[in-house]
Length: 413
Length: 204
Image 1 (cartoon, each protein chain N blue to C red):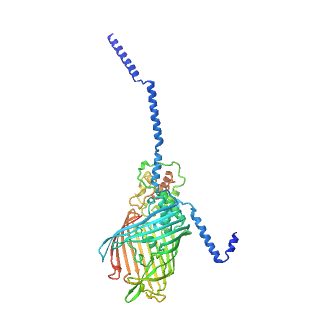
Image 2: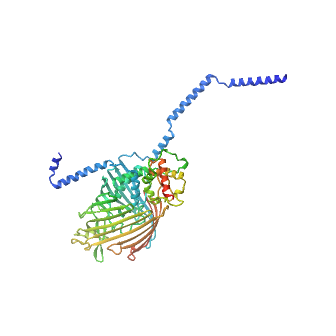
Image 3: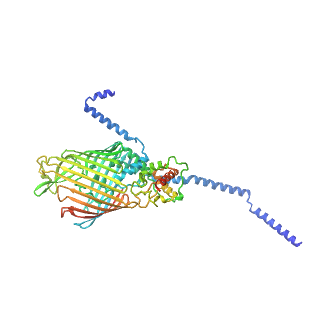
């Protein structure tokens, strides 16, 4: 009996408690409406935030745009700077080793659509005396006439051969030095001032490229040695005026019969006049007549996978005096050639280079035969460390006879 | 009118001068607009055949699109390229200069699921051959030899496909392979077809 009462009491208490708890937890209609309103406001705020924020896809598009955006939208006129620089160390048999800043050569491009481009390369060098030398290596306005012709006007790199016009930048040249005879005052012309027509065209499966030019031409230097005047050198470095009024015409034809091989033939012809005396008084010159000036050249390049073989020959001939000048009656010939092989190890940044050069000039002290061997490490394809050793054979005691060790770091940009 | 003009220039020298002047005036008009758009596949071939004639190959990702414009026109003058070759090379370089990023192969998303529109052989020949060569041995320095035992093709198909899709910088290679071989138009299915052709042709 008591048990039944107790059980009934417990059941009643539990049920009552449950009802009362439910009644207490149940919100009122007003509260529910208020909550709903708050939620609606929060939802509106979130919707607004969502409207103002970018989607994942939009972020990706923006990221891509930022990554590819230039400093300005691509207009008709484009401005770009390229170039190269090198620093190094040279140690020869006759001189103590010294660090050197080779060259800083910025190249500026200003282009208007596909019609015209202004190109200019400046060259800054620090001389042995610490002075900075500045040169205008070239400055041309290139008019893209059509798909096969470009008219180039101004001071341009000589198209005779390949080294001067395409291979001399230090990040391209596989050795720290230029082959003897291909530098300044060598056998190969460096630059000229005038107009040039360049381009390329296919002949069936054979591709060709060409350059023909007319220019002011070079000037000649004489020297007084052993009691008489001799021709000392040809300054073919782009004179801004033509003292003798005699123009030079020349050019190069390149033939690519199959991919990886190119053969080039070059020639130039005109007149040149003695205008200065090396380490002497140029005012003593008189009645100098324009002499014959002729250049012939040939070059080749062959690539097979990681192996590259190239070579180049240039001969510059200056005729005898045609008048009654005081400088020198005899003519002179400068001749040089080199062959260079380079091999880059497969899947490696190391490259081996070997080059042989034979330079003959009218002066025995300048004649030189050179073997140059080198090892290059390509940090990137345009940042290269070069170590080389030159075995030089020239007139005993002359600079041309001194073996050299060279180190160079070159960067093309 | 034309006859009148022609009669007014009676001498041969005047006619020659007129013809030259006409030619000079007309020719620039051709240069104002591209006669033909650049072709990506031709550009790949022209790039691999011409640039190494003088210097080490530069990676397409070295420069932005606008920088490549001036660089290619500069090289057109230097290398004696035709205008069409220059446009082809520019199309290739601008289409291939996306940066190669290290992406987890598992995160590579498929862009399309349709079947390849052209055969793997055609895709290889149009997009890959210039660098990898017809025999798969590589035609420019740094490109791996597909024929090597335990070489590049010994990797799993999924890893190889991932590398093709995202691009890859191989250790010791002079430049990275651009994403999708440089041709963003190729779908994953196209690339898979090219991979099957590569493995069938060179891995044995």
